[in-house]
Image (tube, rainbow, N blue to C red):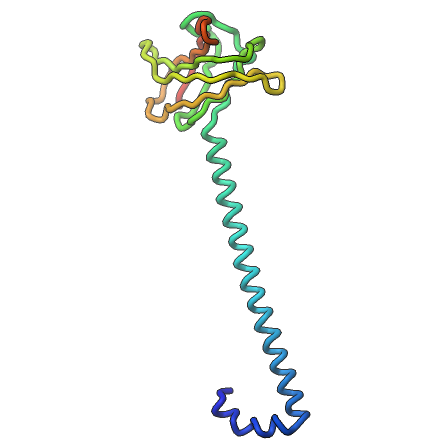
Length: 174
């Protein structure tokens, strides 16, 4: 009730203990409801923010994972020279990747390696280099690549340790 309407009752509330007790209980109930409502709103906001943060985090992780393609060369036969081994299925990579994680052929040693992707005409599309490391008994090499503008099709992935011959693998960009 507005204060203008309650003014005629204020003198009575100040002098009547039972009425003041009722008023105090009403006020405490109102404050309790108000506090519960504020807590419920705050909890809802926190839950919504938590869910939104989790969704953004998941999408960010998916984006990072999808930008790295893993190419397992461990069970592939090693070809010497610039021609890949005939009869082996091609390695497949989406053009949107920004890194290649290469599991090098068995027996490959740690150290600096060069990687390049070559068109059928011999034109080099991408060149990258990094140091291969032995992790969990697998010689791994992660190199940055930018193949997003390359047209889909068949290419050759070439790999070599610095100073050695190129090993070639058929690569299909999708």
